[in-house]
Length: 362
Image 1 (tube, rainbow, N blue to C red):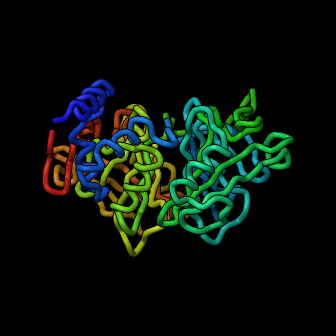
Image 2 (tube, helix red, strand yellow):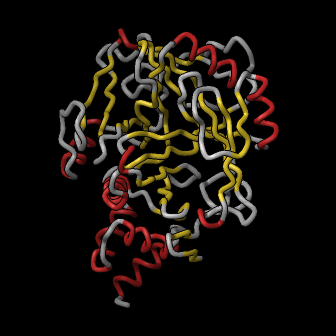
């Protein structure tokens, strides 16, 4: 090993990144060992250093009914309004779920948002363009745009800049400052000093976002995109699906290669304390959901089920329980324990090792 590569490896250890996991991530991305130094340097200091998940926005068929449903289940207070869009705080904030105010005939998670420190829309737009994401686009893959959200939509009088981009599959993401809460102020950081409480305390208290699973056409292409711009490292796999860590915590993006359904956010996952399948099922059943038990998926709105993710998909020997349910529009959500990182162990809490398509490597 050259002195240069040895120094790089030592730096990697100091940052507590699993080197072999990173090398495997390069293999998944289709990158050779000759590119180790340059790509590794990007991972240490990526062009856009995202720190966390910030929010998701839902398009729904009946905004008023969805607001009542989400508040009734989770007890989330309203912390801001963006015109007709309602911003519901997740945990202690600034994370949130936004419910669009327009009636939609295509209910879905419209986009997810990642947060970073020292947000500057102009500089990030330039970085994205330098990495193949065309500026001032509208709705195409590999395009970005900046919306100046004015006072009429709960933003700053001069406009709160909001940066949207689409990945190679056309999936929409948003980038904002770490302080962004969906409110006013130049960074969108000024939300209600006294949030409007939900009508009830809710039945399940959400702690934070955990992950989004994205359906992509070409997994290697998607990994290259998210690693080259955001430096998201892979520290585990669920079968052939890489888990791309967002920031230094337990949050991640999962990239599932599903060509026929590519270009969509399949589901969002949030964490809670005191995770227990029976307890969650009991709450959801009492809230009017049909419990399917152990199943491979839902067939319609207001259903709940559990999958037992075994070692062949990076889970525990006896299975890692993962709880899913659909909202009134059939939008799929997942709930896991606050320790969940997408890995092995009963709670999915064991990460930092690789579960590759051909076997596990510590």
